[in-house]
Image 1 (cartoon, helix red, strand yellow):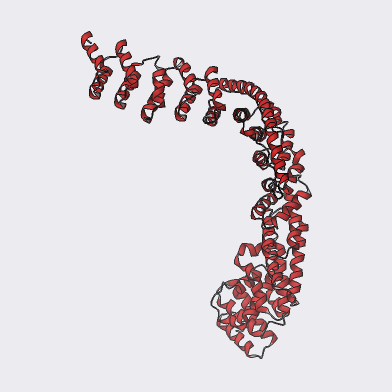
Image 2 (cartoon, rainbow, N blue to C red; image 1 turned 90 degrees about the vertical axis):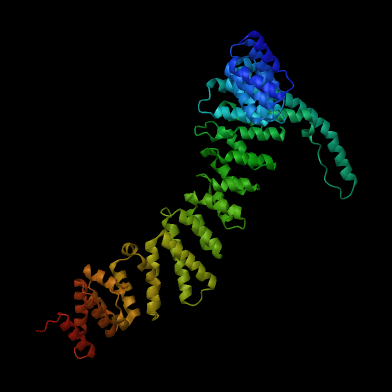
Length: 605
């Protein structure tokens, strides 16, 4: 570039007219690479009043690889033009070590969004001074929490450098020690200052009948205490995030009653990852302390302890103390214990869960249901609670828990359920059962059907036999109809004698009307056909049944012959022949002979 022309164009960057500055910046950006004067001139335009000029200048210095301009880029990062701020941040990242000093200085003040970007750039640098500069922000009331989250996010990255972990661990531990000592002093001082206020309020309350209870002075209003707790709290949470078992004693110490509440909460939160580790060892004292805190009087601390215990591994040695939270006055601790009932929780814990499941609190009921569903030792207590209740909805809750243990319900529990169903059935047949008892019988019978199908079948057949004795064949057959819904279930549930009884009831219920049916897959046909095919003496057994009329036998035989199925026809012919043999001169015998002749089953030539 000619020297005079280049100087003239550079001078135009100082023009009051925006269009001239824009044109000059555009020309210089295109032809001025390698010219120090041009680079300096364009760098100066990073602070131009016009956003377009600033953008052209920024793109130019980035393209030219101009170094040492970190201080000029920071104002753009802090600016309200998001696009320019993003590009300036990218260029800052390219400035390398030269930008670090500027970032360390600037990250401590200004708008939160810009500080966040600078903190990210410092963490990306990863040097000890850079990381320390970010940790310095933890005590900041506005930016401290975001700084903490940025550090944690970098620690979570799959490629997080061991160097970063080492810097954070060493620095955070040292800082926590110093911050703890400083806070102890300011806390004691603030408490002492608050004591007169507490005493004065107490005296004032005593001097006025009906006055409100005295309110203690709040040391947390002290600015030094507030700043100290913010810093130490963030450090404790950060230390806990590293999940180093070696730090648990230190964190546990900060959960004591004499610590400010925010510090106790932070320390409890810091323990969360340590006690949740699958390889957590030596955490018994920590978990024991958390159990005590969860049952404590400070609601905020108790809730924090509950939240930390929620993901903790509960050592076997602490199963009973943990289960004891099921009786806690703290509803959330109670719910947690119910949901996470560990093996070995003991009979008292199971009892508490059973009582909660039968109670009025929906939240406690849900938690108790989940806890009992995980505890095999709860089966018998829940069974007995079910048998003791007189309320349908409560019974259904207990039944739901027992269904969750399907396949693992003890014989004792099954026998007790079956015995109670029989008692209800007895009352029902004697006409002494109330409406509520009838409903409970249904709940229990459905449960037995799910848990022990063979026992349920026995109950159904017992009921059907009693109904038949009362002359209620139709009702008896109806009570067994559920068994006919699935051939597979029926085949697995009944033996041949029960199958014959089922078919017999169907025959009694249908009577001679069976002759008019056209459905050869009717349950009556199907059962008799199955029995005949297996070699069961159907005809002989039917002949012994005095309650079966000849008309019903004729109807059955007639329809079996009409089925055009070989085995069915054979049985049908045998039944009709039986009528002929027993009552040879009756009208039915004559009809039977005619049917046998017509179908080719007669022995007569």
